[in-house]
Amino acid sequence: MFDTMTLTKILGGFAGAFLVFLLGKFVAEELYHANVGGHDGEVVQGYLIDTGSDTGGSEEAAGPAFDEVYATADAGKGERVFNKCKACHKLEKGENSTGPYLYNVVGRPVDTATNYNYSGALEKVVDVWTPEHLQEFLENPAGYAPGTAMGFAGLNKVEDRANVIAYLATFSE
Image 1 (spheres, rainbow, N blue to C red):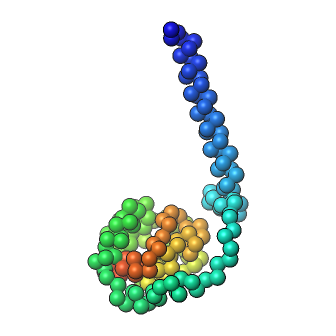
Image 2 (spheres, helix red, strand yellow; image 1 turned 180 degrees about the vertical axis):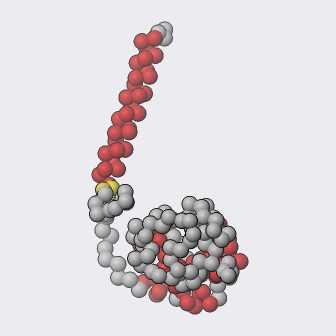
């Protein structure tokens, strides 16, 4: 019933199907991503769907301003929000992980965590991590500092951003 040739044909069929799927994945990546204008292996999106112009200002109309929310921010709630950050960041001074340590980050100059290799994208945008700069960065890291190595999508709610910044401010010298 099953001889060596049948088994070889079945194994060859699976290997061939795997190679076809692997080739399809490679073609799809080349189609939708290109290293255009990038440096240091940075991948820039090659195909972008235009959804219309961004008029701006709609965020402020949708909710309160960051300054108002930050004035009443709750560090206890920020500690719960920080759980999303714990995968890549630590709060102990000098304890880098995938990302730099965040001890004393509020008010600290950008790209100054010891023994951490930064991408250099943040230096082009900001000098010091003020609460306002942190708020903008945490909303959309890739949009705020194009080329940053931080792969986090961001925090959508202004309350979450204010609370986590208030929590980070408690870890200072």
